[in-house]
Image (cartoon, rainbow, N blue to C red; front, side):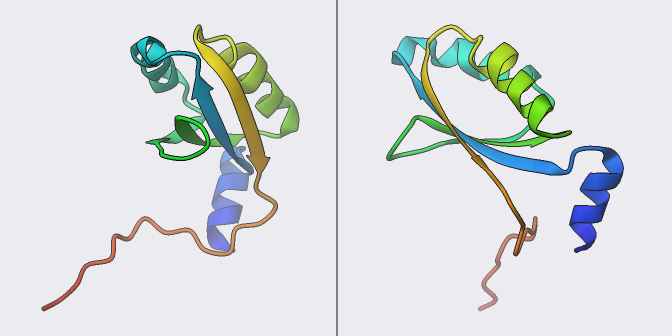
Length: 102
């Protein structure tokens, strides 16, 4: 896969999704500000269901992911819980938005 080799060439071959649950809604501004400064976080979604936010992150490897979780994300005041899922392989990934043509 071409995108995989590009990520590998850049040095960030590991993709993971991190579900974040905040302790209280008042911690949202601090959390969003901190996430905005973390270059490994490439996408941040406010979600319904389990958790409050879903982060898509790119890391150099599992040690880098551990550092991001331990020192970065879990170090932000007001985070009650995180749940991390590591991507084993990417079947489809695109930045193209579907557009209906009338």
